[in-house]
Amino acid sequence: MKILTQFLTSLIFSIIFGIFSLLAGSGIGGNYGFPDFGGNVGYEASGAFFGVIGISLGALVGSLFTRKLQKEKTEILSAIIAMTISLSFGLLNFEYNMTPMIAWLILLLPSLLITVATNRKERLILKK
Image (tube, rainbow, N blue to C red; front, side, top):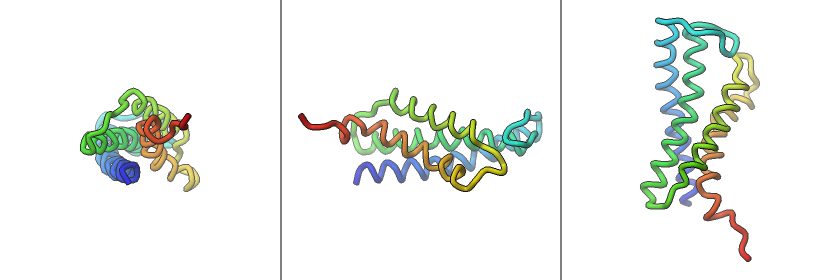
């Protein structure tokens, strides 16, 4: 149950951070310009770019927050590596004409990878 709670909290934080990052990124790109990303430029590209970053960052913060509330040891390095992998996937595969499967992966992959990375020693060790 703790792992499910961590995953869901991570997912909720990633959605919230993604929305706020998208809005902040749109403001930055609309006022200062932004290069081509995902097939557009300006505020549309900037909003999407920062939205993807916000999703990954929110998943990390949500996961670490849940682990702290559960009073469990957190492997921050593993969580940061998982976030970096999922962020790279999101930034490299984002397009405005992407399939829905890729869009769902961009949203769910950070929470999933970070949850697995922070729980790997507790739940995934084979008994000798």
